[in-house]
Amino acid sequence: MDNERARELLKAERARVEDLLARSDPAVRADREAANEPGDWADPAVALTAEGVDQAVVDSLRERLAAIERAEGRLEEGTYGKSVRSGVPIPDERLEADPAAELTVEEAQQG
Image (spheres, rainbow, N blue to C red):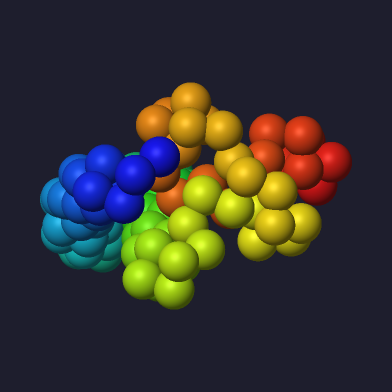
């Protein structure tokens, strides 16, 4: 994959994740505030569970953003498109599907 295409994919993925993160963070705060309002007789475990799920989504988005940043760094270093574990080239099809991929499919399946 050429560098220009990689930049386009990473830019689009970064924009998507940043948008989701921006929309998720206020939602998390709003859910917490609503759960803490006086007079709410709902089961507190429901609010805690929802808060935990929302925070898990935000954490996942932050992890995804960090992976994108690492991929952008590899692009600048000239190592983008190669496995961070083995140095084996990652197929273009995988990079099209996941521009922040760090491993080949086989390596990712091995864990």
